[in-house]
Each structure stands twice: as structure tokens, then as C-alpha cells.
Amino acid sequence: MAGKNQHVVPHGKDWAVRGANNERATSIHETQTEAERAAREIAIRQRSEVVIHRRDGRIRDKNSYGNDEFPPRG
Image (cartoon, rainbow, N blue to C red; front, side, top):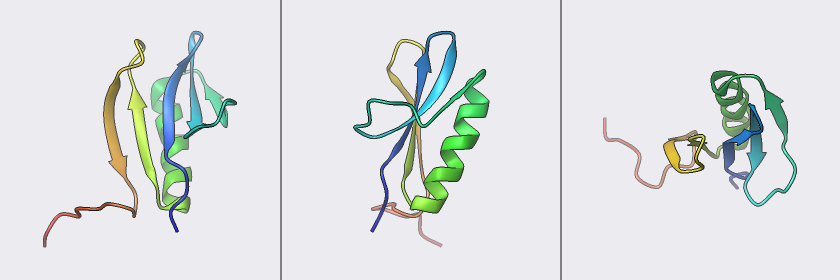
């Protein structure tokens, strides 16, 4: 069973990692890159997805780690 998707979201001047539907942040980081790295580690362990948001809240990118419905061929 896959875990919760991990979202990288703005948190004041910093960036936070937050599990899907969680109100509280799992961790807070000074840069988006640091938050992405932390979210990736969690997503790999939980076989879930990382959803990266822009400062305005829109989704910028998604990366799947073990729970891809349509994995690439080959």
C-alpha cells in the first residue's frame, strides 16, 4: 500500500514538506531544493508521489516513487 503524497509548499519565507491532507508541516526548509530532497526521501520510503508547488500555490511538478499508474516502458 502506498503512503501519502508529499507536497512541497510555501511556508512564509521558507518551504515546507506536508503530507496530503495534513494541516501541519512534516518539516520546514530554507530553500525549495532542500524541501524537495526531504519530500523525495519520504516518498521513496512510502512509495508515493512528490507534488512540488510554486510560491503562488500552483503545481509546478510531480514525481512518482513506486506508485506510478502508467510506468514508462522499457
